[in-house]
Image (cartoon, rainbow, N blue to C red; front, top):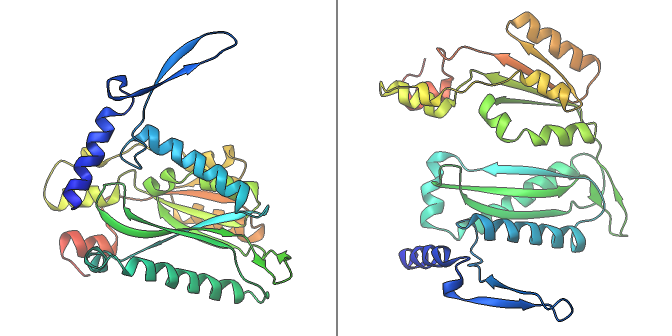
Length: 278
């Protein structure tokens, strides 16, 4: 069944925009001009053109009909690699995963000491950037709680720290602009070894050429400043401490580009790719 679905999607994609497979004639009675509009496949994900149209149309509809006029934030909940085959064999558990995420967020919001209920939109995505099975939950959440009388209250921002890799930060760099726009006290520490970590250490462990996984990154601290926040480039522990002290003294959107060595893999990568647990 899955194979038939894939063949059907690919067949529709190959015919997308080809007038030989159907079209509509658009005619203007005033200027008397007309043109042919080929039919599209309307497929999700596989056809980039049709998928983007669907994304924009659905996004406009959600904004106009569902979202309240308040700030929102996005959360992503992932599943550990060892548990993913279970969800692959039992897809019905993905729905229960959404309920678990909903309960966790409600507990977190209510734990802020404000009475109400959060507004959440959750959806499941079952693949990642490498088009492998990678189930995860995307959540669009109102930045606060709604009361039963129709009112609401923001939970407020508490200082938060995000430690992430350089490639991951660059893939989601626009989120830092969101932090700047809303004045969020967020410190982003970029562990920057100028490489795609998972690919680099996998290639190195198999004694293959690692150069394709190496990337040159700009000064991400400077990028943070250019986006309206604060930032700096740190090459030593003292420079890192100075950047953190500046954030603690005056919390605000801050990005520290911490340059680290590729010769020291993290503990998970040592375990996964090299079989070492020291």
